[in-house]
Structure formats: structure tokens, C-alpha cells
Length: 71
Image 1 (tube, rainbow, N blue to C red):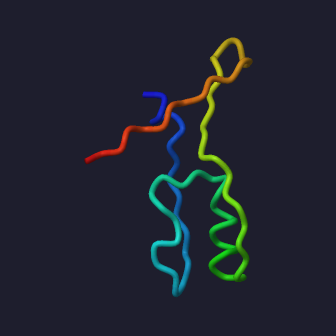
Image 2: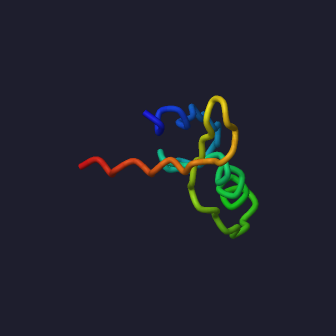
């Protein structure tokens, strides 16, 4: 259920570029991928981690485990 809370809907229009972003891309890695594709850069990617906090106590943040790969 936590994974569903941090999932996003992301649409990128990238003419001439197919498969620009993997399905499990997080927002932190969108711009590096787009810049690499269109500007020829080679930017590093950040770790794909998601965090949530409680409804009452906003700290501390708890990491949402990555989903298990589907066969």
C-alpha cells in the first residue's frame, strides 16, 4: 500500500526518443535522462528512493521499500 502512495503518473513527450525513461523512474531522475538524450550530457542518476511521513508526526520519514520485480 505504501508503494501505491508514492507512485506517480509521468508523461514525457520526447520526439525521436523511444524508451527514454524506464517504468520505475522517480522524479529525481527525469531531467538527467532528458538532458542526456537531447543535450548529449552524461549526468549521474540519484538513487530511486521514496519516503513517507506519518499523518500526525511529520518526522521521522520512513523509506518505502522498492517493489519486488514481477516475473
